[in-house]
Length: 170
Image: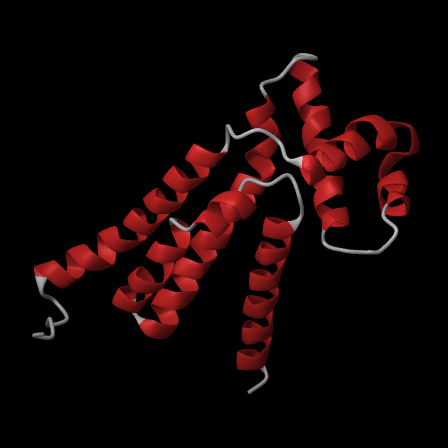
């Protein structure tokens, strides 16, 4: 395959539109999963946040988990999100509950696009993230009312912070 020159219009188009394509793949995958029914663990999370924590506040969420894990941070975020939703009405479509998780998923993809393009180039980023963004795992974990995507986002942010710290100290 012939390598494209730096100022070749095809290369410039690829660099411009590849991130948009990956983001579109991710958004489409997440959108198709926003409307699925809640599964058992998600119902437990919503029940904890909606019915148990209002009386005890954020401390009640932390104390409700027997083993500290990534769901505590997400449950805190979800409690604020559900309070925000309740300002408008007592009845909301359930897919709105999934918005914080989907936002964390899209932000994770955005950060991965930037990281992978910088480290490995546009083609590698496209070939790596495109299958990930249309995978069943991304669809489920990117919309689950659990802390998986929040943990994923925080891990990416930790790696980026460590990379920045190492560059500054070297």
